[in-house]
Image (cartoon, rainbow, N blue to C red; front, side):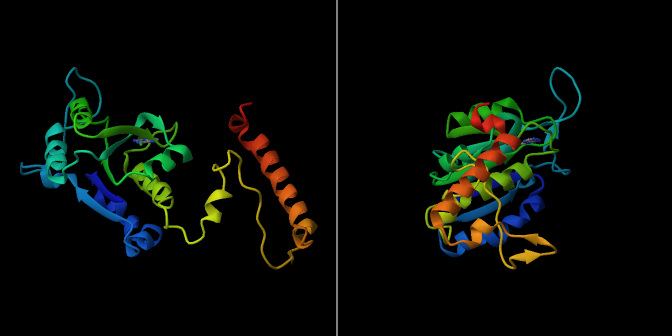
Length: 226
Ligand code: 6GU
């Protein structure tokens, strides 16, 4: 997979150079390129935004820098993700779908958004997805691009050392994950549940499932359709 990220704040994406995606890069499974959108501006002030037609508060990101970036990055056939609070809400199912793509280009929106023609134009050349992290407002789409990248990259086949750890976790089976414990068996007067020390694998599996169900009912009844 190759991921390109277009942003006027490329420093935000610096963590992508580290740890998790770093491993996939080393294995040759992943290439990540972060680009400063302002390299495709041509005026003295590297202007990337302008006032909205029709009036209103805030600024709108100009179309031309995105257009030139799309041409230079050859987005044709790629999946272009616009991060925006008005997009579809990101979840594990969407992460799974995106993990099958060869080429993803993120266009990070700032301010009050991007000129609509950028999205309309991208649709004529690529698969376009508009994605939100959730129902709250961030200053820009950079943090969303970071979160989506991390969720997607760890699902690339061959990326995770132990694929079993992918299956059992929260949101893969529609339930929240059960509580975990490690040594010591007693700590500050708090004991690990006896069943986990019992060695009875069947009982342990039953206990964990019950814990997952209880947590999900308490914290996320929406996941149970309730
Ligand atoms: Cl993708 N962008 C912004 N600006 N705010 C958000 C978001 C994205 N997702 C949730 N809030």
